[in-house]
Amino acid sequence: MIRKIHPSEIEETVTLWYTASVKAHDFIPAEYWEAHKTEMATTYLPNSDTFVFIENNTIGGFISMVDSFLAAIFVAVDQQGKGIGKQLIDFVKQEQSVIELKVYKKNAPSIHFYQKQGFTLVEESLEIGTGEIECLMQWQHQMQ
Image 1 (cartoon, one colour):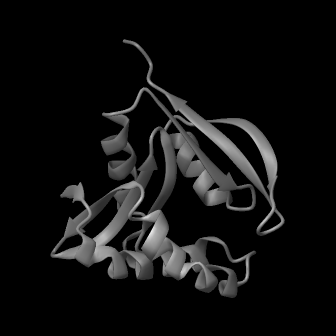
Image 2 (tube, one colour; image 1 turned 90 degrees about the vertical axis):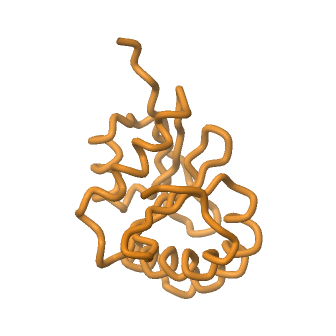
Image 3 (cartoon, one colour; image 1 turned 135 degrees about the vertical axis):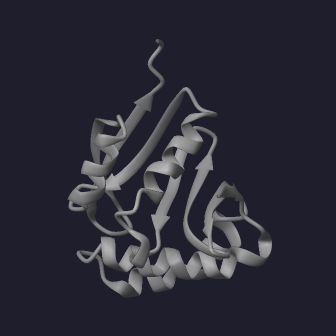
């Protein structure tokens, strides 16, 4: 089931985000993600439209949108590869005609995932906080 996050679930969601971030971004020191936990809990999640994937009363993943920008999508490490990410993307596609996101160029598995979901590369730029190259990707609703 996918539904809007409850305030009581922010701590669990931040833990999921941190664990998945460290795994997906092994080219960035874990301390970078650790330093952003509070900001994630107090600023990012509360100020975005965040939806959680719930199964067996556990958060298996989440997606956060800021207008048409996909600000975050993360799936619990032990739940990856089970289609949760695709379900979350499909969920937000129902409400958007265009979705943009940024992903680190070195995160090849995520780039491949987004391409499978219909996203295309728009441009690359340097992300100052990490010194890594980010890819701006976009999905547009195709008229039938």
